[in-house]
Length: 233
Image (cartoon, rainbow, N blue to C red):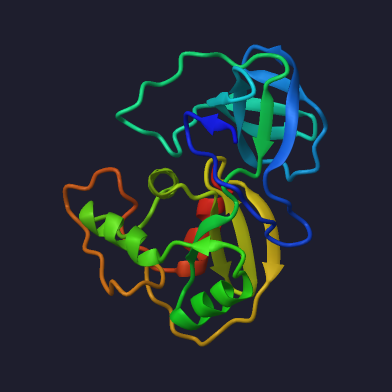
């Protein structure tokens, strides 16, 4: 069994249109981008570059985002970061392995109410869903009731998540945690009329601090806020 300096988590497919842990390799490198073997993964999916020292040892040396079916952009890799371990000072090289759709078997659901949340979790038992209470607690700690992309990305890195699932009206959007781009969509059944802000959790209220200069204030319209958050660049 191979030993990795950073734990790699095995994943399973979300559904027919997306397979997790899509593997490729680097064919050429041009500064901050690389050409890879063509891979059938959604544009915007994130992943990692793995450098193999030998048959028994390997490490993650960079993150990537798929920008074309055979091209990636290098990014910083912060998920599964261990403060007690040194960061490998190794640049990606030709023939290094690329794994896309990384950590797509772990995610968090952002839903307007419990009934919708419950439907999504039951619909996708192949995904290990981290309870939104944990995200709400993080936001409450910083008194920020309107989560930003950075809030989501920090949470994903902390809990090693690959997907944020946004339930908006009758649509369910799978959003890549790192690139924050939509990688899949499905139709869901709208459950109930109750809307809990900023999203369903068992933490009923997240206070706003007047010292929170970097937050987005309070959410007044659930659908509009998360639609705009996904579309913003």
